[in-house]
Amino acid sequence: MFYSSYFVYILPALILAMFAQSRIRSAYAKYSQVRTRSGLTGAEVAQKIMRNAGITDVGVELSKGRLSDHFDPRSKVVRLSSEVYHGNSVAAFGIAAHEVGHVLQHQRGYAPIQIRNGILPVVQLGSGAAMPLFIVGLLFNSGLMLNIGIILFSAVVVFHFVTLPVEFNASNRAIAVLEGEGYLQPQEIQGVKKVLRAAAFTYVASAIMAVAQLLRLLALSSRRR
Image (cartoon, rainbow, N blue to C red; front, side, top):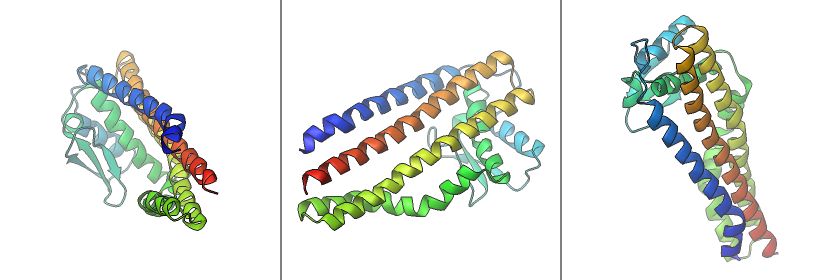
């Protein structure tokens, strides 16, 4: 039962996720070697975009780890990995601008990111508790525990799908700013688009993986009843 459901639901989604990861690694490896003509670094681009947008209360800091770039709304800091922070590549520009895209979303009250932040506490609880509760339900044949585990994991699935428009929108904002404000040449913009599209595909793959896991939980639960 466990193995058959794994091959039906999880394995195809896992293959897709691996393919998505290979795409982003390939795109990043290629365009991190393509230098821009502006002479700016990723950190400088992030700071300049925010300054031009009238945002003065968000800092830019160096983050540890590779591809660890993110915006922390609680600390009001854009954290960029070393290759992006110090980098002058097309990939560095795209990633830095993408993270600033999240800053712009917060500044302008973008609804999906507000929804995502609102359900985040439930998702954090659900991601940690869903599987243990579900396994307890399987071991003790408890329909209540099975249902609670499924409900909590459903919140995780919802979070993944709310994340999709947030990430797509941040990338669109990044491309529009880099192109509209003249940070990059047209041929450089094409490289940014390829990097950000590859990154977006990883979020799609994650959402599909979450759905596959939920379907597996539902299948296992139905067989226990």
